[in-house]
Length: 147
View 1 (cartoon, rainbow, N blue to C red):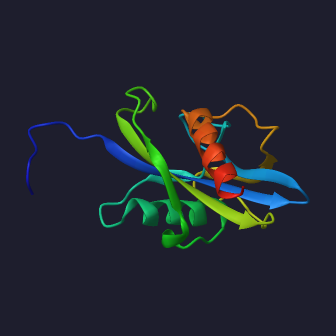
View 2: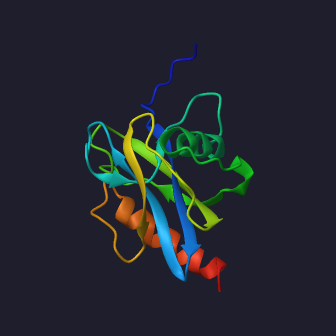
């Protein structure tokens, strides 16, 4: 195995899932079951495996943590979030994706997510990590897609 001279950050993928129902917009969040931020709400997401793309990681984490299926090619990349201190476990870069659904689907917490729930976009709980920043960008892009 090749040894790198420079340290490498970990890479994660997060999936921001929006649904419109009855004229109201919702976003899917998971309650974290483990530290850091145990009990806090976040987007479904997690660490990328060596053999998968960021899109495949986002789709896998969405399925594992909520039970929802989304094809990797249906996800829209909204950006990379790279703040040095965004994750207290160490240097972690995340690639965030957007997924849009017609109506809320049934979800259940799985893997390291204690619960999964839909929240009205105007009534969000406090979010873990830098997910407030990710939410802001995702919402702007999603609104632009729906105009």
